[in-house]
Image (cartoon, rainbow, N blue to C red):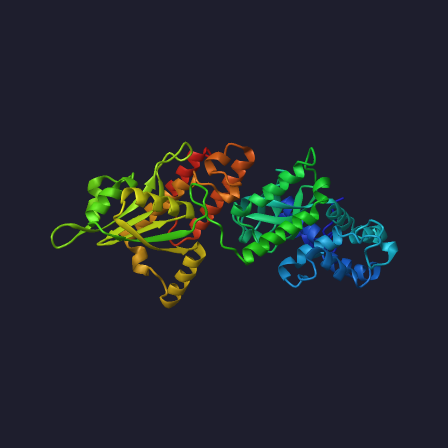
Length: 476
C-alpha cells in the first residue's frame, strides 16, 4: 500500500513521507527510488555485523580470517582491500572444525551473516533481510565495463558468465571507462543492482588474460558457470585480484620477444675492416631487403675524394607464412675502418657473426660484443632523463617532422605486432588468436588497453591506424 503524505516514510528515516522520499518519487525514476530505499534499509549493516562477530565468533575471528586470506606477511593494512575483506569475512568465511581456534559450536558451516540472520531476521527491515540473504549467495566476479552512465552507474558484463547488468553506482561511475574491469560483489533486488563491495582500482583491459584463464579452468570442471559454482571459487577470485594488485603496484619488466620468439637482448658486435667502406657495403648490401640502392647510398656520407666513408642501413630477413613482410633483425653501421652491427637477440647475433665470416672473409676482424638487456637500457635512459628533464624538448615533440617520424615508427611497430608472438595471448600472434572465441576476447582486451593508453599519451596513435588493426583482425 502506498503511504500517505503524512505517514512515516517507509525508508526508515523517521520523517514524514512528504518530507522525505515522496520528493524522490516525484522527481526520480522508480529504479532510483528503490536504490535509495535499499541504501537506507542497509545503512549500518557492516557495523552491526562486526559487533555481532565479537559476540558470536569472538575477538580472534578477524585475525584468523585475515591470516587465512592474506597470509602472515600481509595482514589487512591497506584500506584498498578492507571493503573486500569485510565482504568476504561476513558472507563467505567459514571457520573450519578442528583447525579453527574458535569455539567448536560456531564451526557449524554457517557464515557470520547467515548466523546473524538466523538470530535477528524477525527484528530487521524485510528489505535489509532480502539484501543480506542475497549477499550470502552471490559470488565475487570480474566485470567488463561496457557502458558508463556518468553520475548514475555502469552497464557491466560478467567475465565469468557473460551476463550483462545495469548497476546504479553514483560515485565510481565518474572515473570508470569503457574497457576497464571491476572486481566486485553485485547484489540485485528486483530490478535494481548495487555494488556491495568492489576492489579499490579499475583493472586495465590488457590484464584480462589471467581472468579468462581462470574462467576456462573453472569451466573445464563443470558444465555451466552458475553463481552457486562460482561462489565456491571466492578464494581463487580474491587471490587473482590481489595478484593483479601486486603486479600493478610493483610492475615487473616484461619479457619482450622478437618476431621469431626469441627474447629481446641487444647485442652490439664490433669489427675492424681491412677493406674500404664501399667494399664492405657492397658485400653486406644483400642483408637489406627493403630499400633500393639509390635510397640507401643517399643516406651515406662521402670523404673529401667523394668515396663512401660512412653508411647505416637495416639488416632485414624475408618474412614467412605468418608474417609476409620482411623482418627487421638489427642494424649495420660502417664508418671508415669500423663495422658495428646491432642485433636484437642472441640467435641473431650468432647468425650475423656467421654471415660476416662468409660475406667478408678475412676483411672483417672481430673485436668484441657489448650485450645489454632492455632493463639496462631503460635504467640508463632514466639516469640520462634525470640529468636532463627530457631527451626531447617540448619544441621537439611539436616539431612536425619529428611527430611524423614518431607516428611512422609506431604505425610500423603495431602493423608488425599483429604477427608477433604475444605472451598475453599464450605466445600466439594476434592474427592467430582471433581464430577462437577466447582468443578474440583476449585480443580485444589488448586493443582496448592500447586505445586507452593512446588516449592518455601526449602523442596518441592515429585513429585510422586503430581502425586498420581492427579491420585486419576482423574485429569491426
